[in-house]
Each structure stands twice: as structure tokens, then as C-alpha cells.
Image 1 (cartoon, rainbow, N blue to C red):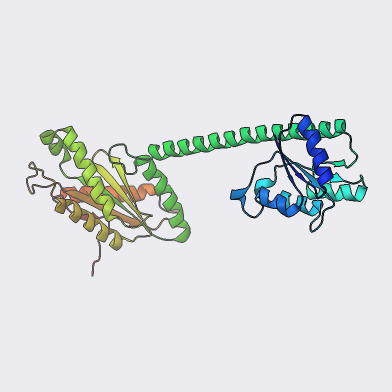
Image 2 (tube, rainbow, N blue to C red):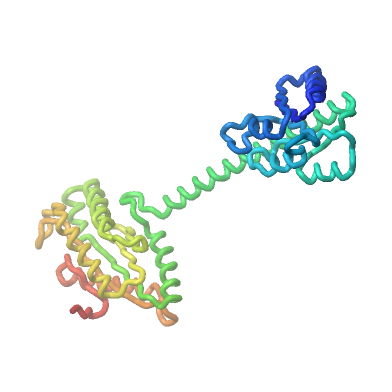
Length: 330
């Protein structure tokens, strides 16, 4: 146990140090002023602080008394847990009250006998040890809790991510759609949805195998994701070779523009697909719908409209964008 004694009287310092040393306390540091104590304790520079388990602080000292020194120590973050025992000439009630108000845990007088001095010292150090152990357990528990929270968050994120492509999965899509629907209804702002299908993907799988098919899905997911610029936009794997893109605060015209960019991006990537009669590269078909959420419509309406638009895109030759409503382009 490391003990710091602060007393401007050399005789008092020597006497207290001698009693403590003979009782088995060997790591004792003595200083004669509050300023010296502050330097050792790192009051102004915590990185230079020496660690102590207990401080004996004389009340009456020049420049700064022990009560003010105790108050400063107890108001310094890295020193708050060090117990302070004040040393007084006599146990005057006002002095003791001021010392306790400043944060002292106990006191001794200049005339306190060895037995009482050591008993109080051991008692305070025992309390300090128990408090340190409890604090260490609490810190361990807090660290464990944070690790568990981090692990749970990672698991949650994984549960919202498609294992193959790395983009959002259907569960995350459903969550996001619900969130944005409520926000759109509150703010009376439109939500747009694209349903996207890789054209003739079964033929691709049959020709090149499922491993190549997986690579194709991952490449298409990458091409789509890099074209979506806004943090609020969400690309998800809706199922199989089908993707969905949610565009909050986007009207039908804006959504069509984005959809056409996505279609062009995939086509120009040139992923070879020999089984396509009209083209020899992988293409996508897109169905787009847009709704301002209200009391008379639901998320199902938005999904059905996008599905209908996607069906038309595939029926009308694929590799194209269709909207649920007739789009007026300038």
C-alpha cells in the first residue's frame, strides 16, 4: 500500500512515517506542502501522477491549508477515489466539519496514539481495497456488457444482411419500408419502389452452373449498389434473382431516372449470357411505383404496383423500365 503524508512539520512527518513503517507500511512518500503533493499526484498533469492508496493531510499549512488541498484533490477526476485522512492539532467541531465537507474520510489529531492511528489507517485502507475490488468488478461487468452489446449488434446486422450478396435482405427491406412509410405519411412525401429481376436467370444457371449464378448475383448487387448515392436509399435482395430498391422522398419521375441508370449500368457491365436470344449480356427488368402514404393506402399497394410494373417490363421484352402509372417525361 502506498501512502502520501503532507505536513509542513518535519517532526510530525518523521513521527507518522516511523509509526507506519514499523507497522509494515514501507511505501511512504513525505512532502511539506500542498503544491508538492499536487505535483506528485498530477493534479495539473494526470499523465505524471503517482498512484497512492491513502493520503494523510495536515490541516494547518502555509500557502494553502489542508482542507482546501483536500477539496482540490477530491474535485480532480483521477484522484477522487483516494481516501484522505486529515491531521488536526485538536478535534474542533468546525474544523472537522470543514474537512469532511471537503471530502476527507477520517481524521487524526497530533496526539492520536499509535494503536488508534494504525487502527484507523488499516480500516480506511480496507475500505479502499473493497471499493477498488467492487469498482474492478463493475468495470469488468461493464466491459462484458459492452462486448455482449457489440456482439448482439453484429448479430442483428448479420440478420439483416443477405449472406450471398452482402446487401440488405428481405427482413431489412420490410423494416425500412415500414419506417419510411410512417415518415412519408407524417411529412406527406412520396416513396418510390423498384422491383428488379435478372432476365432469364434460370437459363444462366442452367448454362453456367449455380456457382457462376451466385457470382452473377453478387456482381449485379454490386453494380446496383454503386449507383445508389443517397444514404437513405436501400437496395435489398428480395428473393432469388429479384432485388428491390426503396427510394424515400422520391417521386415517379425521379425514380424512373434512377431505374434507367441501374438498367444501363448492368447492361454495360457486359456479363456474358449466351442464352439470351435478344442479347448476349446479362440484363435486368425494372418495375417502378410511387405513392404518397396516407390513410387510404398501405405498403402492400406500393408493392403490388411495383410488381405489376415489373410484370409489364418482362412481358414487353425485358431489359427495360416500366412504371405503374403513365409517366410524363419532358
